[in-house]
Length: 321
Image (cartoon, rainbow, N blue to C red; front, side, top):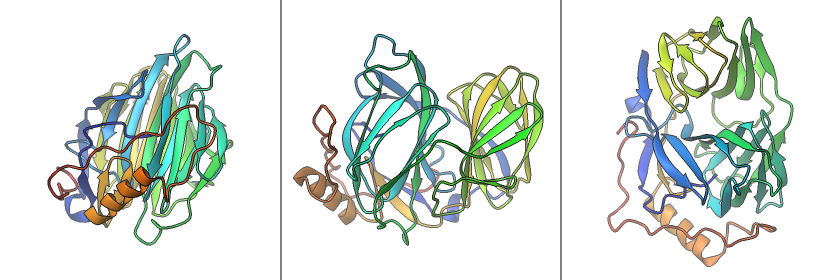
C-alpha cells in the first residue's frame, strides 16, 4: 500500500535514544488519510507521539468498508525502497502486482510480504468481482542497513502457524511467539501476530522483555493490560514485559506488533526509506525518469507521480516527536 499523501512530510525515525525501556500504556489516536478514490484509512504510524515500534514504521487500519457498489481499493503503481510491506486482511480480497512479475490475490489471514530492497514498484486493487466488505491493515517494516539493498522479492503464505489458549487464537504473521515461528522472511528481531479473542476471554500472552510492543485494535471490545481499546486505536506498551493481560468483552480482533528497538536513524519520505536526503532525491529522480523501480504490468491506469520535495533540507524529527 502506498502513502498517497500529496503533502508528504519527511521524518527521521529509529535510534534507541527515545525507546521507553519500561512498561507503559500510551494510547495512540489515528489520523484519517484518504487512500485512492474510495478508501479512507486510519494511520497509526508514524504518529505525532510515536514513530516506530521495533522495525515496524508504518501502520494503516482500514474498514470494515461496504464496497459492494464501489471499486474498493485502487492504489496505482508506486515505488518502494528500504522496507517490507505486510498486507493483512480480516475481510475482502486485494490483488497485488509488482515489478518482479508477481501477481497474487490475498485473502483474509493470508500473508502478502513484499521486500522492496533497493527498489520495487507495485499496485494494489480490489478485484473487479469482490466481496462486499473490505477490512484490514497495511504495515511496513524498515530494513536495516545491512539488508536494505537486497534484491526485491514477494512472498505469499496462505498457511501460517497458530498459538492457542482458552478463548484465544493467535495467527503468526512474522517472527516467533510462544514457540511458533512464521515462514515469512525477517531481517531484524520482531513479531507480528493477529489475535482473535472470544467473548469473555481472559488470557495472558507471553512476551520478550527486550522487545517493545504495541497492540492495534481491529474489531470488537477488548482490554489490553487493563486499557479499553476501540477499533482503529493502538496502545504502545514499551519494553520490559514478560506477559500481556488480554480480556475481551465481546468477540474481538487485535494485532500484536513488536521487536527489538531499531538501532538506526532513517528518513522516511513518501514511500521510500533512506538514510540521507541525497538518497531520497535520487529515488525521486529515478521514479520520475522511469528507471530503477521497474514496471508493473497489467494495471489499468497510470503510475502515481512522486510528491514535490520540501524546499528545506530533510532534517531529523526524532524517534518520538
